[in-house]
Length: 387
Image 1 (cartoon, rainbow, N blue to C red):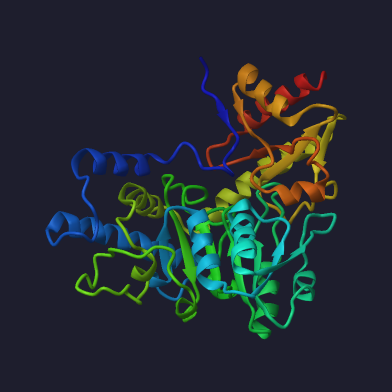
Image 2 (tube, rainbow, N blue to C red):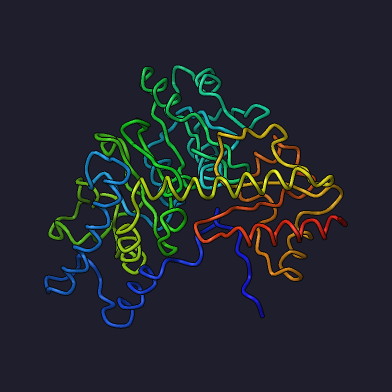
């Protein structure tokens, strides 16, 4: 049986690099210790290795210091810390309709249980939510603006730098969901100048599942309550939660296998390697998009997709065909793995007009995707389309 072609890298990168797998395997087989919970050398060495990974990530993102990076169980937990920890009764939030359920569902609960008020802003026909439209929705009591960096449905990159600059002038905090861009695009936190940036590490950074982080701009920790409280391995004699970062938000045992894998992955990830990999995937993605556009029955979303302002995530449908059935055919008959449905971002599909269709077929490339993979996928779509 031939190896399946994996085209769902927007969900998680796969397979993981060999150096990541080797480090996790060695830890599970020969160590298996907790980090920061023992004064013996092996435990301290694992703790140092994790802190080295934190420092590498902070350097990659140009954070002010390593302690600005709080490790979490994934991007969802990072977003929850920012939203539940920062927002209070009666606050107003401006949010784009592009957002993932990791933002929409916490906000829905905060609206229901804490009286937080929400204003939704829709993208234009090219899938872009203009900074001026987000700012126009702000009120005197607006506390936060939520906008992702790039859509996990359409791949369209959003103007977050302009948004953060405008919001800063009005003293409104900004939360950026960078799930689809960290490790895929060079990111400079000093240039973006956001208050919070959240992302998983298992996508572009190629770490194991169960790893993520939240960046907090200096002094923002004074306004954000922790989501969990408990043991941190520091100040254990006190009944109160530590106030220093990152311990304030890292209660409980860390996901050591995932974070050791992250540290190993970051040994060979630089902004230059990210740029080179992105350019390679950008060419593959453009070719795939151009070829899909030549198939008469293919509908690409959004209809006016910007060519130069997107990552390598494509959404499309085949006319008069259920995307979920097409996905099943690709999997069972062609051994091609893609994502179908709503991609945990339901409001995007309302804007695209794909809700009643059952969502879209999403193809997302990765560092392991080859030209042969894309050609095989295109041939499969042509066959399903009857060409």
